[in-house]
Image (tube, rainbow, N blue to C red; front, side, top):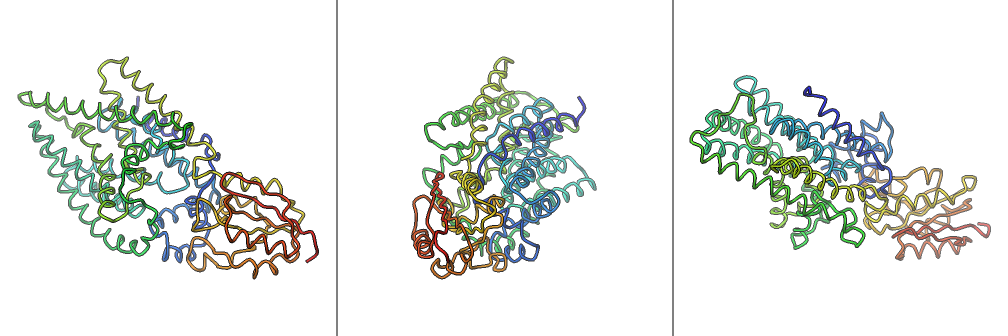
Length: 524
């Protein structure tokens, strides 16, 4: 088969699979942040990045350009992620083929879509699909540069440096992948030296020298960028310190995320965890065995021109795990940096390890059995990632649907966006950002700040007693969106509406949210 059909076919299939049920999961606060940021004009977006979310600025700019052409909606930003994951899958096929031949290429592409974190990123309106693309793209350019000589090598290293730098601009933690690239090349050099494969031994030190120059330049450029981002470090205050839960985050949630967590109905989604780690273990043990056998050979094996520089496992092992381990170390040192979804950058390399583990099994029937087991245990998690409540508590979509079903477009209506259970730093206005059609034409009764002008993501509510008398004038119906537990703001809204001649005619509890419908019963 020609070189390109395999990546193109697998990439297209991965995009198609990623699009299945992509609109089913309810939106959540991260996606609302993408929508509100990319829905602003360029001056307002620039103002926002000066106060918050600068770390996502490059991604927001990309999505801002894309949505200006294809429409600004939750569906659009999710479809962008699905397409980007498909392109990444094609590159994973090329990466596997570069490291271990056509079989490893195809197997890596298939394993890629079976990693739950990949399917999560493919349906998430955030940057993580782009992070994976940058990770694989820069790695392929690293391998290309490592095998070049003279002038072509300088151009190849410059291209690698450019893509790696853009990746760091996209997500600061991709600088750790550059570090992992150096560790991978170091393993190449040590492995080559021990095997006395002189051709590879000559290449590896030269590659390390090229990487050192590029990494040094990226490091120098990253320092001011990191310092600038530190002024917005309050954004990561939610990251947990290192604890016993960190083990679970690394072993389960990083790549083999259980969408329904550890509830009884989610037990099946955990089945992939032991299977995946067993395959990774098989890949590592197979490589160790191969190294031992190579040592026993008198002269080792020569490296053909253009062949792989190193065993696939030795190369991808640092790429798969070193970034997460460095983030955990930083978090343990007091710099809160590690969250499971940050491991997205390493998901493609975990896929290569899984594929290597399957192919390392000697007998064909064992390989078929292992592959089938990986697919069977991945499917429950992949299905769970397309359920309505996958993201947070999943009540935003049904909340908006409740309003859309019950409202009368002929009446004058207003809405007070109360507090959310899953986003206490904002309010239910996030629901209208994700599902604007349900609130089209409604008067916002509570917001008193201009978030876009002030450079904030979300607006803030004022005092109900001061705002509602004037803002409800001429309205027939008022909606209140809040959390099911209730709070003082909700009680103040209810008391004020009652005094103004409104009566609550319906209350719908949707998960952790509540939708109250108030009708005017006396003249204003």
